[in-house]
Length: 224
Image (cartoon, rainbow, N blue to C red; front, side):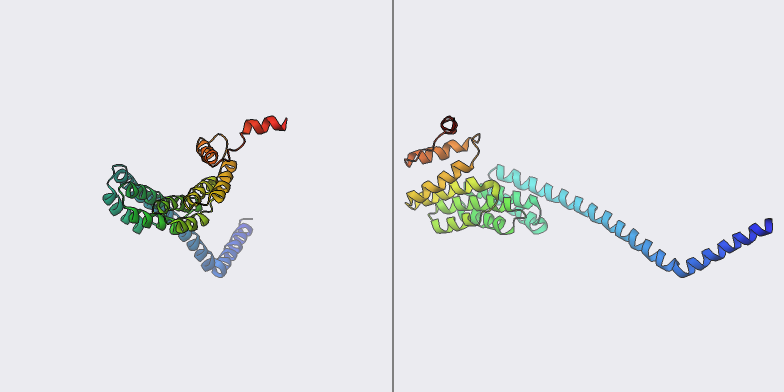
């Protein structure tokens, strides 16, 4: 009986040796590839977390300088943020903060350049649209109306549709195009949610143009 079991064990061992001889190298390389990929993934995640932390720290410095009104220091810090982490949300946010500080300091050309960078390099359409809205405002102040309208044409984030229409109305009104401005304001008013406080300002603009919109309550009453 013992001899029979020994023969079976020996046969199993021989089969295992044959299997390993035939497939051992392949299994080893597959395991190495899997472990290598896992190790690389862990290393990538660690690097990404470290990169986000460094970008976040730089953004905080940009924000502090901008809030303090030190546009020059904010610009120097942002240069490092842009060069090292230009494809992060921190860079887009930092640029918007910097542009605000530059605008308030009267550095209009610098503010335009900063906003143009976000408009062209923003990682999301929302950042690009915010930048184009603000850039259009700067261009409006400089009476560069056609350039302002081009920026608004390229501002496509759906969430800002009403604000884009409102800014377009401002530019058109500055050009003396009252009917077109009125249409833009009407679009802004109808697109904007009733609970948004800014809607009252759009309504005031329409009223000043002799096109006061019908209130939502009046519409509801008429529907009854």
